[in-house]
Image (cartoon, rainbow, N blue to C red; front, side, top):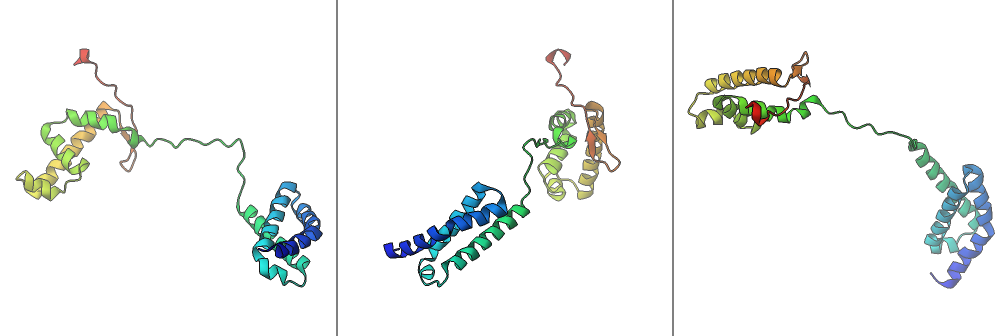
Length: 186
């Protein structure tokens, strides 16, 4: 931008900035925010450079830009809700099933080798029942029966050992973690 162009903007700005400041301050009731919006209007005038020089009525243009900036600010302010300073963020509740990992590991280690093997492969590692059947030279119906019985035994063991309780649809609702066994009690 050449010095004559900037002088044109500066001249118009000096004439109208105090009116614009009053316009913003009156509508916002906040001097700091009024100054911020006033600065936005000035920057838009500087960015418009050539178009600003050719304006017949720079005051009208500045007021139009000021009005648009005010509307944008108020629209943005309306869509955001300020949060109180004393807002307390509650920690996410621990879902009972998330807290069962130690109990599952312990109970799994106490199952028979056959039950532990099928639960480890099919339920924990995600091995397909047919793949497990093929690798263990079993039929698919035999694997389905074995895993069903192994799951029932594990559920019974967890209910007794970790005091796991289930809701009416079969989801874990609570449990009491079992303390690790000390070497003296083994």
